[in-house]
Image (cartoon, rainbow, N blue to C red; front, side):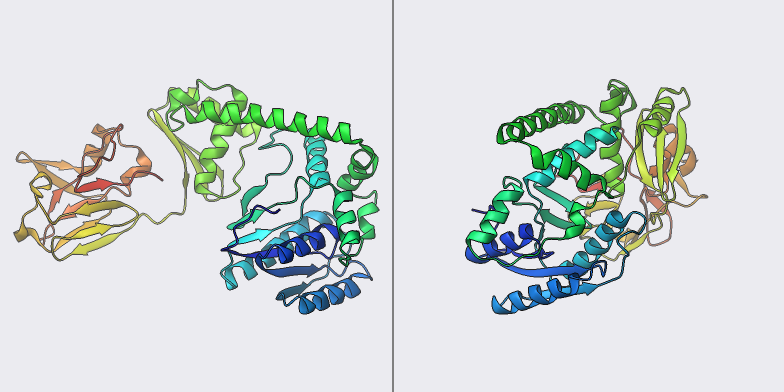
Length: 404
């Protein structure tokens, strides 16, 4: 039985191969709601007939199908990567258009083991060995329910239940690394060898999980905590941080070493551009990745005491606002981002906000988005105090969102 949610509607990525066609039949028989997405790359002469056969089969089973035709020569450079990019962009378009809940792909146990061998061969950073049963790609929930099924078992399934399918002959080509691993290693494995390899993958992934548990026990925004990690742990921590800002962001081992030097540096403020749009920032004991192009200019008008939540702050001014030095006579209030010449009067002394932020040791990345409150006359009457270890507690009527 497939372990999916029958209240949701899915998109099945279907090539008309035995894996995806067996999955088609399972979904249908087990009462799941789904439609089919199919890409014809125009690389094989027989692909046209396969597309027609799949289209007819969907019609017979009352399953909606969307087909995308493109042209990629099978001998073109990096065919597999380009084909993958095209199909996932197409799936994303359908996913959004039909407001679907998940994309289902037919990766099976052989794919899982092949991926592991390719990962070991390539070396370097591996986020997780094998294939995850659930991931997020292109903003889609991606499910792989066949990872416990071998390729042969799915072929047997199609033959037993008379499910039509076609074999892509390019899968036997020795031009692709995966096909070499498939033909020379995985297809020749005994059941015992498969089980041993899967156990090996499981053990390696458990070691990675232990690393993430250690990382999560640290404050990975704190320079001192990051420097307590070894190189592999630091690299994984930096990848986690970067992906909060940019989906799919990656920190190579060499880049990790550059960032480590920044963390060890005595300089209190350092900005290091990773690539266009993504910057690593160290500010005193704090560090993070930030988006270079994020909008930091905002201006909100509040005409009366009320509740407001933005991406920059939360407020509830319906009750006592003495702490913010706000009275009813101050309305309408303006809450905006700081300006270079902003000043505030504190105990009859006029202080530049810029100077105040420095004294508070506020990270430079927050100084452009730290809200200031002005009364109806345009005078700054309140600037929330920056505290490094500030925690949001129940009952606060105003707080700044510092999560970048």
